[in-house]
Image (cartoon, rainbow, N blue to C red; front, side, top):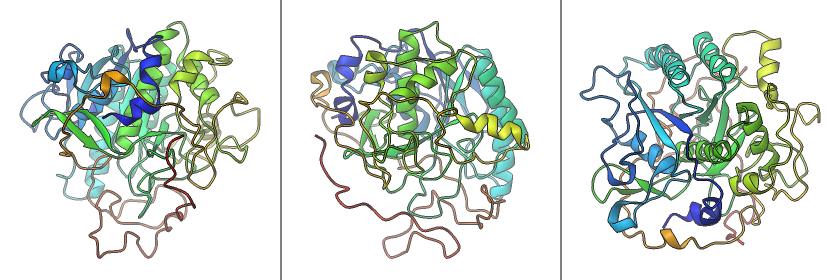
Length: 421
C-alpha cells in the first residue's frame, strides 16, 4: 500500500490537479518506459552515459525508473491496481547520467559528475522541463554546476535534489543539494519525523515522505519498496508539478513560494530548522489555500542572493535566516514540524485512498539510497568539515555508523515513533 498517498490525501488532490501539462526531468540511471505504470508517461530524452548499453529508456540499475514511478506512475499495472505517482498526469523527461561507482576514486567521480550534470540541467531546461529532479549527488560542486542551476532558474525551471542518506553517519553535504538555488529535500517517515538516514544542516529546504515507499519499478512484480531522500525528492518534485498544473501562469518563483507558504513548519514557531528545513511539502494545502504567490521574478529562498553576494563558486548554502524580509509568510494553520526532528501528527490528516488499497506483494528490490558513491578524500563541502567516509556505504550491524572526525547524528527525540493522527 502506498501510505504516503493516503497520508497526503492524494485522492482529494487529484480532483484538483494531477500534474497534467507539466514536464519533470529525471536526471538518473535512465527510465524504463515499457513498464505498465509508465507506458505513455516517458518522453524522448537524452543519454549521457555512452559506456553502458542502451539509451535514456534503458535503466542500468533501476533507480531512475523508481523515481519516475513515484512522480508519474499511472497505476495501470495489475489490472489497475498498480503503483501511482503523486502527479500521474505529469510527463517524464529522462536524462541518463553516468553510472556511479566506476571512477578510479572519488575525485574522479566528482569531476565526472560536475562535467555531466550541468549539461543535463541545461538540456532539461531547453527541452521543456519545468521541474528537474536530481535524486543523486556527489561530494563537491563546481562553478559550471552553479551556473547551470542559475540558467534553470533564469529560464523558469525549479531544481530539486536529494539531501543524501548519511544522517546517521558522516552527514557530508551532497551536491547539487548544497548548490545555491537548488531545493534540497530531506526525508520523513510514517510518524512525520525526519528519518535517521536523512541528512541535516543549513542546506535543507523541505522534507517529504521517504520511507517504505511503494512504487513502480523494473523487474519482478514491477512493484518495489525503497526508502531514502531520493524518494522524498521525487515526492517534492511531484508536489511542484501538481501546483504548476493548477496555476500554469505562475513562475517558478511563485510555485516555490506557495510550497513554502503551505509547508508544515517547525513547532517552535521558527520558520525553518536544520532537520526539516521549512517543513514537509503539502500539495493538498497548496492547492486549496496557496496564500500569496508573491512577485514573479523574486526567488523566495535566501541562499541564492546570499551566495551571489559572496563568491560565485560552488559554496554551500548559508543558514536560512528567520527575518521576515527573506522568508515566506506561512498560514497560521500550517501543521508544524518540531525542531528536534519530529513533526506534529496533524501534518497530514486522514487516511484511506481507496484506489491504492489493493496493491499486493511488494518487492523490496532496490537499495535504500540517494546514489552510492565511493569514499574519497574530496574537499569538505562545508567550512571546517573534515573528510568523512562514504555516506552511502551502510555500516554492518557490528559497526558504528560514525567517523571519529565527523559530527554525530542528532539524538532521536522522545516519541519519535508516534503514529499518524
